[in-house]
Length: 319
Image (cartoon, rainbow, N blue to C red; front, side, top):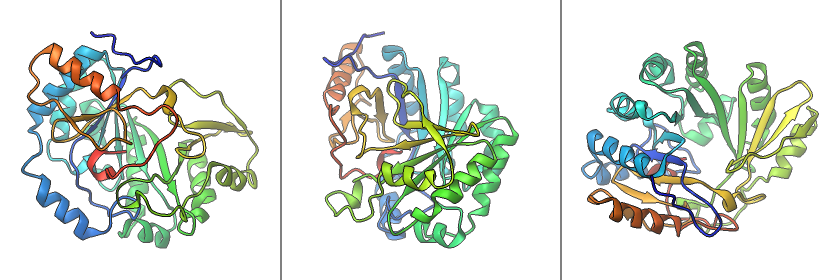
């Protein structure tokens, strides 16, 4: 294991793996629409790694870095045909094995995910109201995601919720989402919208700040801040009733200074930071020295102060 650290004592301990860069939703903060998804799929499907190659890369990175957490993302990982094979290929590494999903297919896949080795799932749910959900995702039937959440909890998987809140779109969903999560004792995180993909370089009219979120929640709940854990992406609060919620405040309160995340895409490239569009290819890197050199290059991509935005999309690199 290499002791790879930068001058700010940051290291790589969490690996986020994008299994594919397509999705079965078409959320407005992620894509320009269904045509965008279809074109992306046609352009990328022939270049994606075979599952054995992906597992091999993950295992190499763990051997070098001593990873503590591996999170499987997408696009949407539950539409990845080799998902269970990849989970089974890395579950013996002794790390926390987690997954982020939009939940559309979670109801029918929860039992298989649990059996394969998934311990925790983040479900993206930006609205409880059906009309608002459709506005954001360009799809219908939010109830199937609710059923998926219930199914995952039922088989013993820890479930957390992520909700991107946008001014003029779904800020009216903050309290309904909190009510839903607290009633089921699910940890909820609100996310400030990120300047990525087609939103990069655009105006911030949809930005909804951490303070705006807190002001809304304070109208219904009493809460106190919790101490932020090292390398956490979120600030957390605890309500008087004992419920915990977080806010990923990319803009209001950046967390770059102690970030420990490394990202691997579905083509065999690594990224040390979402703010950097420069992929570092490691697929054909056969020596420990060569891989270490490329990991250091990824470490050098990290920002110190705040997220700068990127032309990368969440479809390409995951959440």
